[in-house]
Every structure is written in C-alpha cells, then in structure tokens.
Image (cartoon, rainbow, N blue to C red; front, side, top):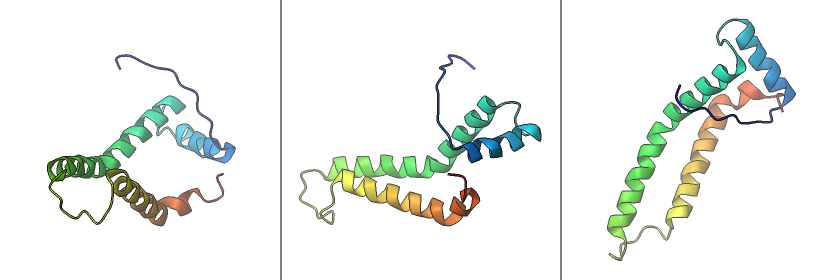
Length: 102
C-alpha cells in the first residue's frame, strides 16, 4: 500500500462485536483490513451508480441551454433521488442484517 492515512471512526458497540467474529474466524487479519476490504466492496457495488452519475453529468451538460424538459429537476434533485433510491434498495436487501446493531 502506498501512502497511508490514519483515521478515527465511531461505530455502535454491537457492530464492533460482530466485526470481531470475522477477525476471530480468520476472514480478516485485523480490523483495518476488514474496513479496507469493506470500503473496496462498497465502491465496487456503487460503480454502476458512479457510471450513471457520469452519464447524467454529461447529459445535463449537453442539454443545458437547449430548452428541453428535464421534468423540472435540477441536477442536485436528480442526484438526491438516485441516492434515495440506492438507499431504499440497500435497506430492502440488507437492513435486516444489521437490525439491533445500533
């Protein structure tokens, strides 16, 4: 790993306890590795969202000033809706995994 930056995070106690199980079972050598791998996985999961945002940014730039109807949504409003949809889809699929952890 090239440059390293140390950060502090705050997590619910139950979530930390659950991560210790993964480390104790040998899936990760330490907490830092678990966090690094988790962030990498999240980036991969969000890759399609990132690509859609790039496409939308390009589309908005091309359409600016042409007077086309974009359903009266600003770029920020559209991105907010995309994020909301992403969060709702995540909740539907994974929220039950973390119930009782907070």
